[in-house]
Image (cartoon, rainbow, N blue to C red):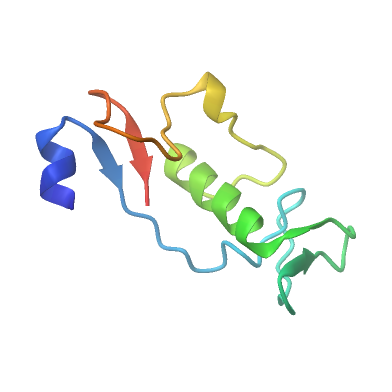
Length: 95
């Protein structure tokens, strides 16, 4: 897949997913996840654990680290979350 992405002129950023689904989106607290719902014991933030992980991976890809309290709006950036057909040159795929 990587060679196909490079051939299209798309930047691929490899992200270590460690702690991404256990880090609170609001304040960065680490919590164990039980089931599919993430619940921060410190601030009581609740969300689907896959969504928490996805936002943290996206922020890590955009900023080089997880930045609690900051969510990237995909509509204001050159990020492709999912698409049909060929990607545009210069798009960023986080995976």
